[in-house]
Image (cartoon, rainbow, N blue to C red; front, side, top):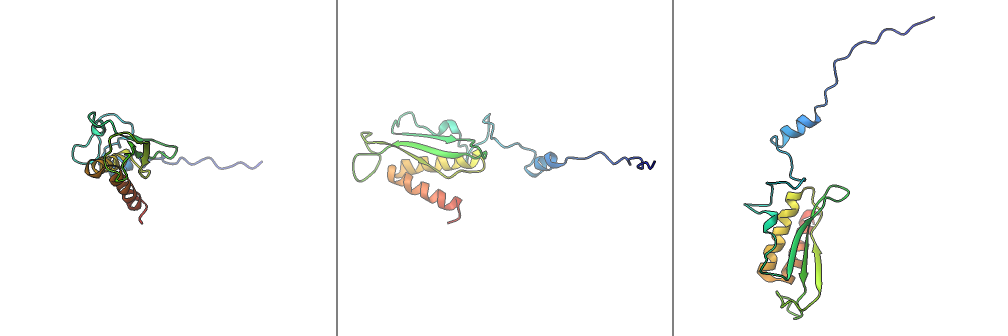
Length: 140
């Protein structure tokens, strides 16, 4: 009977993916796990998103979702006055979400942009900023 030739030994397989990823981002891991560090711009931390003196707005970062993405979410009180500034808190609670981002750091940057919009002009400016961020994210 005919026999197969003996198997040749091949060099051990190398799985370089992890090492390449670590090398590409300077050996740092991303901050998806929460933990310490990470953040938006200069010294922006997630703990600093909400102002205890302003009960009309609550900002947080949602995620990860099923596709491991994150987004900024803002819950604010819609003012009763038609001008739509930072009202006295008698209106409806509204929720605004920014676009899904590939990492927590980008979503945190969006959250701080929405916070700055609230401080600048209230409800209407948050909506404008949300639209601007989405257009930027989706290249419109």
